Image 1 (cartoon, rainbow, N blue to C red):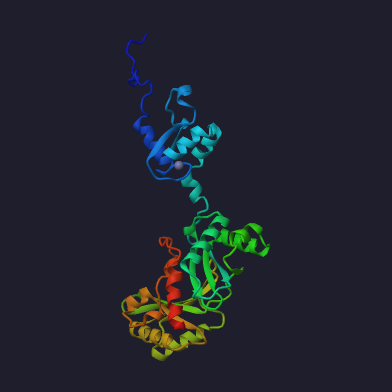
Image 2 (image 1 turned 120 degrees about the vertical axis):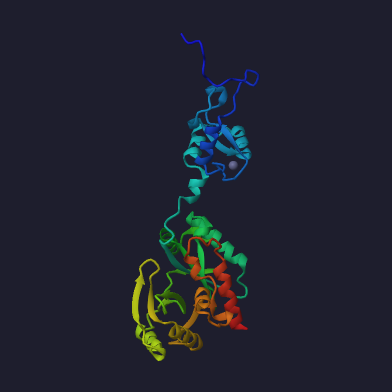
Length: 329
Ligand SMILES: [Zn+2]
């Protein structure tokens, strides 16, 4: 016979104890501190999947975190246990990231628009990104505009590999859903990029007094020997290595030269349109080599777009557009 009960004290007036703090904490972690349905961050409420009046319990398995709005809707619209459980096991925070892959597993896609550069606005940029994100069911932050070129506008987008393939397939087969979403956005074609007119130069330290200059993307028409030839004008390279990135489908060339040679080589390439290609230098290289380069020869952020930390998808496009506008003027 038990004389002492060890259960939590019950407030008989209210008849319903608060959800224990530990349970609340675990539920909040479960949903990433966001409403399980809509992702609203706070304040959040603990909703009973099995109504309290039935269960008279605060079991973790029978509770779900919702915002006040969704909680009210769930009650009013009688979503029911099955729906609520679906949200519990697949809360917003997981659904949102379900399309996420390794940041490196991305691929480029070229979108050509029937627009001129001037009439292509920030709003167009956003509309395209949002339309494609909706079609591909991925977060907008996973679509990045890597470059914008003149003429009829050619956007180079960077997408998760799977999404890129899906987009190309949909475009090829003339998907109605895709054309509906892109309606009014002047999209002419979607294809794999076949060339890059712009060659970026990066620089990083190598040992005491040496610099690795990296040229990418290296188009097929430009021979590695040509660049080595340029390096030889200013000093003998310490090493040369070429590689191909299977993910981005582009070639790199790395030439190790002395600090002095690297500077002179960069200046030379920026000054001369070499093999019909235009060279631009990355901001990080400008800073590292302490170069004096006009702004319109500097790539501000496009390279940085490859980094998963940069979440502003339009930044690179705007930077490059500014360049192009200057070039037109
Ligand atoms: Zn909500």
